[in-house]
Image 1 (cartoon, rainbow, N blue to C red):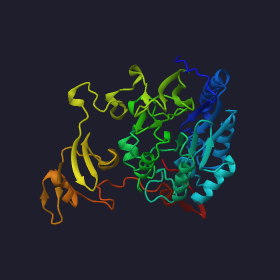
Image 2: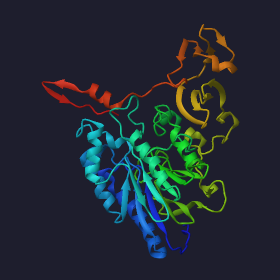
Image 3: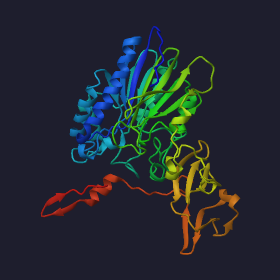
Image 4: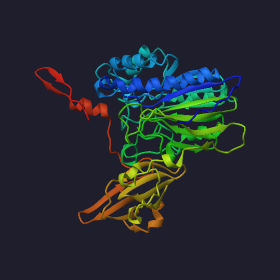
Length: 443
């Protein structure tokens, strides 16, 4: 079991960071166990270092049997958070606004959340040496496409910039449900990228957050959840400039790779240490240490080689994008420049669209390319050389069953809409039977 770094500065803080909870009344034993483990870690820092302690939770509070997004779910989560017996704050996740049974609008749902938790959905928490800022998603029913896109509205974005001006000389830690585009965090192409709900404001100028980080070097850490992945990947911590973007796993049994993990960050005015708390083993692992004044251009990531998760047989669960068991199983990228700062990658029998500036995946063009040929065509329907994608108005996929044509979307790229608004689907799924409305649950 790793020992936490011991220092005796004048000011010290310790904060547990809890990812997607998805509390289930039937499995509260897991959450009580995880909460106790985090409380013990914080208590150790408090007793040994005199640290001021906090807990930050990243949204998505309830599982299906807790009726996510409802008042009942919020009350269950509040009771759970109070059990940490220290100061705590939350941000909203996408599932926190799907309380269709209790609320008829996103605004009403958010008001219901605030009333239960008695806090704003955007906040500043001064933890001594550092300042923490939380930003929340505010739309679900009103989303143009996927309701699961984590969307920070204009009011919060302006407020965020104002706070960065106020705290320009203080280290800032940011907390959101999903990470920013360009953060380098591991993402699932066939799920979150395909449905365009991977990054903050995925469908509407997603680069703005990484651009904000570039302009504000006081942003040192940015925590996010959303993907239900563990910390055992190299890409569980991404670095851009002087900021580390930190993936936070799950405490319950909704993990996609079998690990149940939370984070703890502890530090002082000189820097911080970042830990993984493994709820399965109870062990604490030092993942990163960074001193603000040491001149390093990036934080020093300390994830042990022997604990890096790598299973090429499960595709996206491999932590190494170039990992080989057999050369025939290598993940290869054949790149096509589509112009308009858009790159297409032919990989794993899919066509994935990437943002050229951030080198991040932003959408899926084709989910099954097997046996088909890719061609660019111009305005007159003539085939173009593959290197002249910038002049193409459409991409055509030729196979034995015919030709599939994909035209540019309004953003200039080629990625397609695969997931529509969940609330609209829910409304359409209701059936009227003898004057009574029956609600059909969506998977």
